[in-house]
Length: 533
Image 1 (tube, helix red, strand yellow):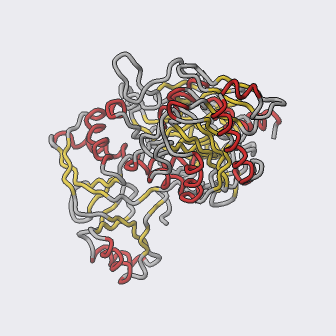
Image 2 (cartoon, one colour; image 1 turned 90 degrees about the vertical axis):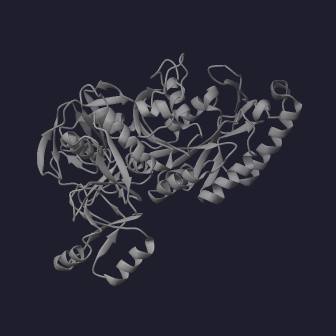
Image 3 (tube, helix red, strand yellow; image 1 turned 180 degrees about the vertical axis):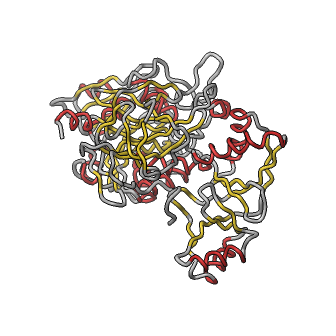
């Protein structure tokens, strides 16, 4: 392969930000974009009239509710590198979108609220990273407010998440007495000054932490406390082990305040220096190295109506190897045919720009004429199926009731598109012509009602159903599966890919069905149009 291709791929950094709601994730995303020069002014999540909205929240409902309900993809350059950043929904009701997104990145940035520590959703998302051995970096946010002791936070991360920590930066005070951080690797103080655009660096070359220069900067008490804490940290562990980080066993830890721009630039520089360039990807057939010259990619997200005036559909592909060129032809593995990948775009939330080329590690949106599904693989001819893009069994169900029967065609189109992008799962009961919707979290129903009305002009209401568990069913014996479907026809539905699915109201009923039907496989996840597991 050419040196130029290798150099371009080495410049890519692709990561997702994960956190519990309200830890400051969208604010941090905005500040990273600001430092990358991608935006001129950072937005607020709940903007006042005089302010702009967060760039990463592009749906109208996101702006109204002040939450992220879908993953946003953003590309920007920084320091000679190309950054692909994905802002994921923090709310647990949209966790399915987040889980899929994590399959498309090489590392994750875990955001932790200094006052609340490791919260429920952070733990769940970290477990997905741990399962995939995704390298994780941690940023403790809101240090300008009163929070928990930094040592206590480190201890909680290590015990609750089961991962070691190495504090790259260490806070000097907190709340009203927050003065900044000490950077342990570069040996410099980064001084916090409210309303400043960035931290004021104070290099300490040849200076001890208890030198008169440091005392003059911080004061005697803060200096004495910092010195004691750094000695404790140094005594507890050695140098930073990048290999342990790459293997998902160690999290580099940073402290700061995203809303005040403090610590964000340090974090961005660490992402470039420490986080991995594009990593190899596992396909059913073999492992694919990012530096292979031939283009391969997979679709991890489909989004309809990003531009409502054009009723467009965009498929987001993660390029896994080689180089992509505008309007090139690629082999669609599931369909078994070549197709032209048109209108390649990179994003700043809903703002887009056409690209002429992209490389392994990049995330590119391509025009979807209705042929892409989540999990689809693309290549330059090789039959290569990338694994691990999951669809999760829903836990909440409702029946769709159309208010205007004349709009059934628009409703079907809307539900088809929303199901293909993974916003909702649509089931057809085997015993009626009804349409059931299934979601992982109930807030998704609110988003679906809103989007069907806003994007397709259709008013619907939902009637809740008594089910709480869904399982995809399969068997190596076709006659056994047919008999099971016939015997349980009132509970069996077919999903958007025509996979038979059974819905039950209580987990104990599912256990009973599993015990009584040993030849039937009940799957809690599937990988889209293809296999169940």
